[in-house]
Image 1: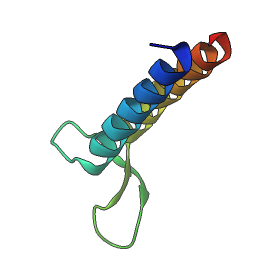
Image 2: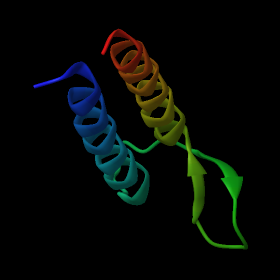
Image 3: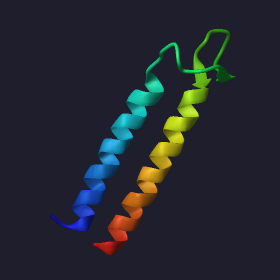
Image 4: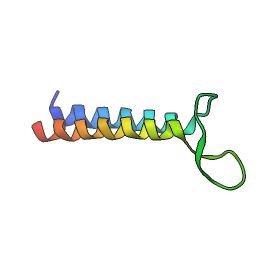
Length: 68
């Protein structure tokens, strides 16, 4: 399998994990950093961690794409 195909599959999987990580809510989500309205909906502290991990994964996919 080529490096480009692997990078697209990995980027898609990382993006799905990003969506599930950001959309989920648990007791360990941390405090709300940015609220949307008057409810608890918004950006939680763990959303930033999920986003940082996604950015690293996408950066690695770009490196893999350039190799292929």
